[in-house]
Figure 1 (cartoon, rainbow, N blue to C red):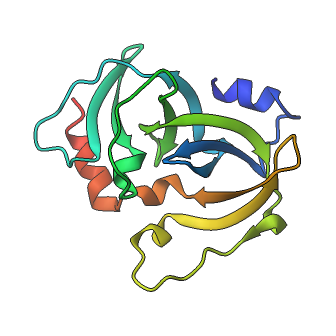
Figure 2 (cartoon, rainbow, N blue to C red):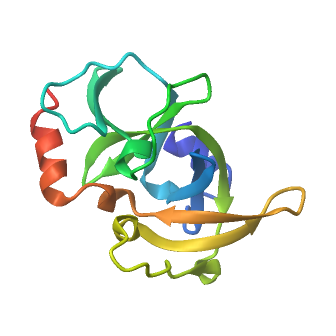
Length: 168
């Protein structure tokens, strides 16, 4: 799905629209306005000296894109990729970055008023990535919690610079 496909789901206004995805049986979301496309797993070229969560790079239609395994970046256990595993290509600081996720869920509307601040858990490292927590209901009326992420915060500025400088 590319950005135009995401916008076609609504009226072109992506404010309040989130792409939700699963990681280790938890539902996460990122604002759709940063998502460029979603692709199936591609052959990954491993790059020496990348951090463990940076799986390498892919060549997507002539563009070299660094990949981050969101599971590993958020401190979750590594798992084998399967038919549901996919890559969310996100625009981060005017560069493309791929996030490997267990499975994409949906594009949904989450009004800002429905997003509560993230819980404060002392030294919890994941809190710097979270912008909030939203409660949503699925088509069957089952309530779910969505951990809302800021994709740009997943990497510290210096980490992002290192990945960008090594991508070729």
